[in-house]
Amino acid sequence: MDWSRIRAFAFDVDGVFTDGGVLCDLQGELYRTFDAKDGFAVRMAAMNRYPVAIITGGRSVSLRERFLTSGVPAEDIFLGARDKEELLQQFCRRHELTPEQVLYIGDDIPDIGVLRRVGCAVCPSDAVPEVQAVCHVVSPFPGGKGCVRHAIETVMKAQGRWVFDVQLYKALF
Image (cartoon, rainbow, N blue to C red):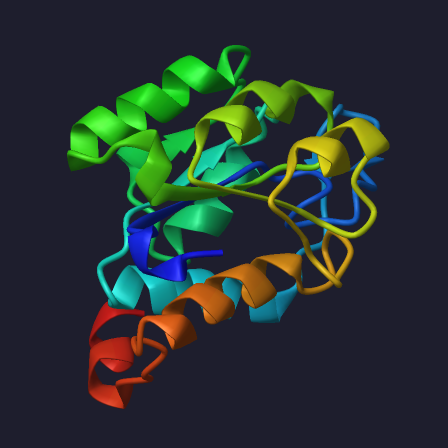
């Protein structure tokens, strides 16, 4: 894989940042568990000025809050996504990117269209077989257990940009 062409990251949520499990309370609020190391990797990408998009069918307000605190701008958080390819195009236009410059991680059937369009299609190790078949990279990590960190860190290290700036981190987060 030519990591040098990657200029942005985009992600599904359930099954990527989470293990796919969702808890629901009696009022219908959904709860998910996220891996803190994945979240830190998103912060590293944001600190190093990589555009980051969240493109998910999930609609919970808590999702927006989770990614805002990770440095993803509100305009790049797409909840309730039904046409993920169109939302990827919006993200690319906003940041003057081509889809070939984006790494996308997805795990299930609704992600296949986007995975086929991007320059680097990645999935967790526990993605459905149809997704694994269209991906350039199958992470050694399952969803919710480090696949996001692995992808971001791999790209940033290959580009010499996996550098932690304590002062910038304190200022941004």
